[in-house]
Length: 239
Image 1 (tube, rainbow, N blue to C red):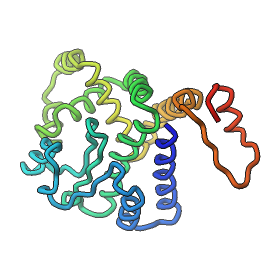
Image 2 (image 1 turned 120 degrees about the horizontal axis):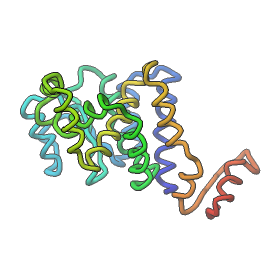
Image 3 (image 1 turned 135 degrees about the vertical axis):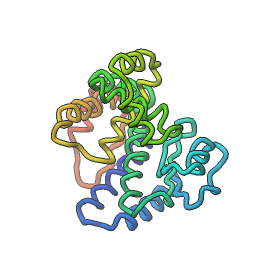
Image 4 (image 1 turned 30 degrees about the horizontal axis):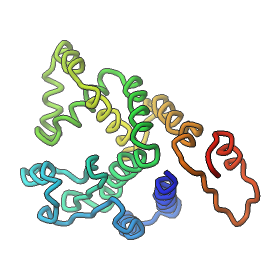
């Protein structure tokens, strides 16, 4: 758990540096991948470089779909496919979506806590968002983004309800996961601020995160006794 926090801390540090100092997206991406040292992120410049485990993405790219990146839950790896990006900014945004949201939060919180968070997020989503993101995770690679929008527009209200009722628990979790990643890539609009704040409150349940740790380590050259250390001690963690 401690390793997950350290790696996620590195990610947030890089993003803060990028935003604060206006570093070029390509410079950021190159530095980020180098710093991660291959820890879960792969920049792919040719579709033929993809390993056999990424067959679905390979077929989608070969069929002409504009796939820029994806997270493979089975092997906990992120792939960024650069030929489909229009510019370095899109590569950066895809990195936020796939590595920070999909992989980073899951690594940070642990699978069980992350799934519980997704259940809470699903309960906050209205029916339109549920339908949009459920269709996205289930069918976007097969029918493409244009085909997905056409299908939504062609569905009656009863069709939409029937589709949502037929979703499995895993489908709902995946849709909520994608909904969270959407914020990481595109930011938060005014109309979405309320639901985003609820998501942040869920993620930032400090006690729950501390309970997920085996050991709390707080290295510091400057602070003798930080309140974060005291807070960790109150949960019974080894410090």
